[in-house]
View: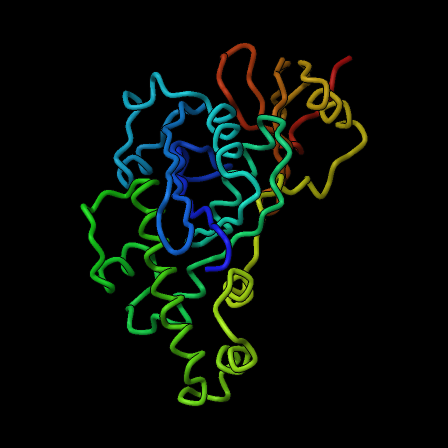
Length: 286
């Protein structure tokens, strides 16, 4: 590999809705070797969904003394520097980190992601499916069965390493493959496997970005944007079906998910992070 890579994985606190970071693990790869690692649990602003705990085994008691997401994200980005990222199903991890950047007011890094999922689909064709866990079994990689961020980041690198080996074989004898294959045709013009070629062949090149802005954002809700920029509180009338109430909140993030726009905010009354549909905010109060 012609440049270092940060291979990462995230675990979430939430199973549906906006993602919340629960654990971040990563390894630094230089000259094909793991030279350093980063791993931290996160104390999220929302309860851990039992459905996610069934996957990764992380419980509320495990994160009581863990740092918040903003602290972990700042530490991670300082550790990662300007290196490129890699992940399995990279858009999913990029989305998790993008939401946390928005909540913390952190400018997202511009480093691209190499995605091992489409690479494995093109190159590890004997695997019955291309989930990371199935690939670990197909390639007979060492595993204790735990679905945790640092272990999965190592597995992602091992899958990516296998993809590099198979790409190099195609480079040395591209004529031995299917010449109608777009991958083989592209490889024929290359001399070696580089980070740039992996990025190109992974087809998807996501970056950590802020959540999509709501597509319909009426003028009457513009004060919410200003409150987020200023870190200020705001009150509004909220409800539907003839029922409404006055709420005071500390706005965090505005985002679009499928057909609706949402506001994520800390509810002053309940003291917890809640999500509000924008079309149910009837009026922002002065």
